[in-house]
Length: 125
Image (cartoon, rainbow, N blue to C red; front, side, top):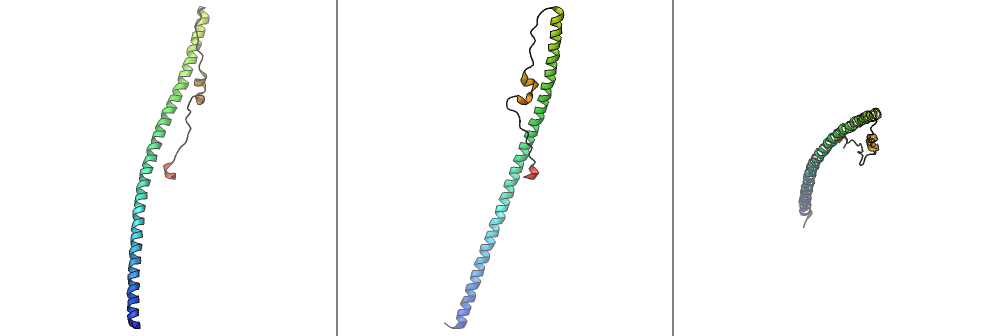
């Protein structure tokens, strides 16, 4: 085998090696593009889940605020009614049972299962 033949085989081998290298690189880029697409789709689903959970939280927080306001209003009503009963009892001389306002109504933050306020901003995730 002469030098020209060796050079020709080496060049052919180099070309084939370069072709395989380009194919591996192209395949790796395709895999990475597919992985990016899959990750973006997962991200989209997670953001939707976060948005849904955040909306539920806001709805529950709003409902909770309404209920707390109702507790305050009803507690005030109960106190007023207790005052009326006490006055009626004193005026009539007839003893009426006056129910005390439960401590849990006066201090709603001590009620069982207090809600912890945590706000999630989906744009920060």
